[in-house]
Image 1: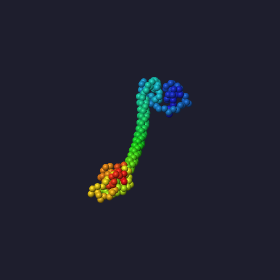
Image 2 (image 1 turned 180 degrees about the horizontal axis):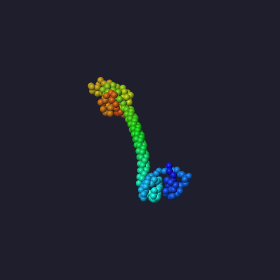
Image 3 (image 1 turned 45 degrees about the horizontal axis):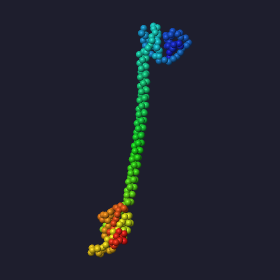
Image 4 (image 1 turned 30 degrees about the vertical axis):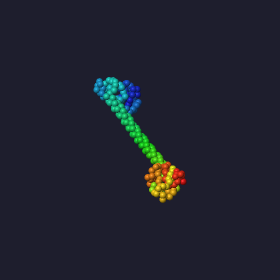
Length: 233
């Protein structure tokens, strides 16, 4: 705690102010807590103690007055204070930038995860649609097919009406009949109306269970009256 001049605010070590010469009343003391610094007087080399905010000093030993443009101690202290402040501010800004960068990275990771999940769901949904469409196409295609009830050789010598019913029950819609007159010793024993040849789309080579389109053209060749050929009578 020190006494300061009530007029100029300088430190007082006696009854008179060393700065302005103001007499200090004995009963008046103005306590003030100040930051003190020291420098040497250029005239007598005495040590002057002063407030760092003062710009004019008066030596208490020789009375010499000096202008303090900025002492080394003050300059160093100010530089240190400014540098420390800048460092502190820069550290704070660095922490803020680092925190913001971390937040940005977390947001980017979250967005990537969301996009990845959405992409996976979309791909899965598309594959599901493809699978459903494929199943529907397969079902639709299978509904256009029909199994051959028996093989070609099994139709030989059966009555054409029996063969007709078997093929219609299997699902075939386009059945044609071709009647042929019996002749020669080879077929004299064959009954009238018995089948001697069957083709599917012109091909007689088919077996039981083989799939054909229901729209396939099936021709049944049988022995009968040539005049009624083609109408199944």
